[in-house]
Amino acid sequence: MKKLIKPAILIAIGIFIAFPVFSLTYYTMARTSTPGFCASCHEIRPAYNSWKTSTHVNNAQGFTADCMDCHLPAPQDTINFFYAKTAHGIKDVFVHFVHGTYDREKSREHAYATFKNAQCQKCHRNILHIPNKRGAMLAHRTVLYPREGYEKKCVDCHRNLVHVDSDIYRYKQNQPPYRGLGI
Image 1 (cartoon, helix red, strand yellow):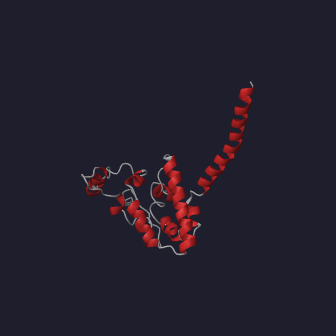
Image 2: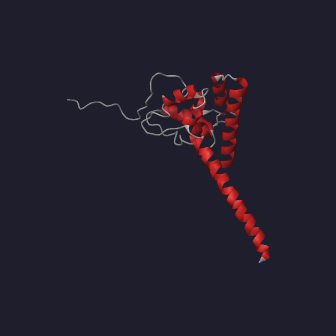
Image 3: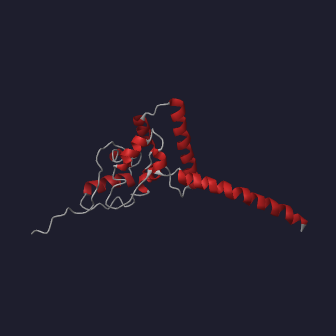
């Protein structure tokens, strides 16, 4: 019985310490994973504003793709997600305090160069079914089934969908145009 007391005490201490640490970590990750938090940094504010006017926020489906959906691995891929999120945060803080300037165009080009098609395909899964747009369907086929040694990225064609400055909100209708009642 005496042999069980020490391990039981150590387990209880471990739970007592681990639960708050896990809770704080989870809370911190959840609070820092919102577009509003990203926009709290003045360097990111223009990207946030351009995102707000894009079809990734304003669309007929009512779906919103936020910063994490595109810029981080899927949350189910826990280790890569936490690593990438932490690395992005450290980089942004470093640039803010050390460089003092943020080259938006350079950052944008780096993001496009490092984008993986899987990041887009987290949301855009059925890209071969595009009624009445055979050319788009064929182009998407080259992304899904690339030839040997040839990789095509989603951002090769869809480069200016989100972070483009605009004074108007873009709204994509996926419905036939309203023709009226014919009266």
